[in-house]
Length: 93
Picture 1: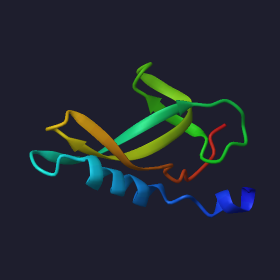
Picture 2: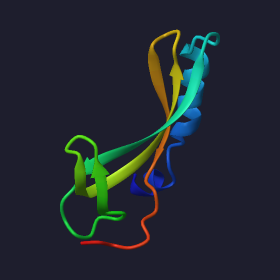
Picture 3: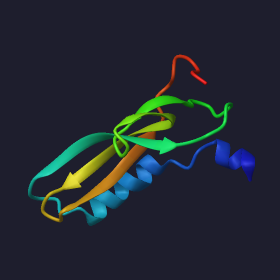
Picture 4: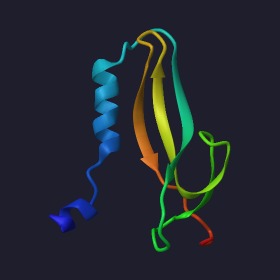
């Protein structure tokens, strides 16, 4: 099971299909990017560094995710297209 999960699931294609199937198809649509912060402790987590956390309005230790989303203003909703962790150039423990 671990070997199969390492290959990836391909959520980008699944999410694209959901957007095409359930999106309104007309009206105003936007493609947006959002940086999301997750608090994490420990020392040896890949990509663990200090990032700005908007919730606490300060820099904290954790993980950052760049989320690409499709916003459908006719439906007043957003569909996540993909989420990736940016590469960190150094470890700041």
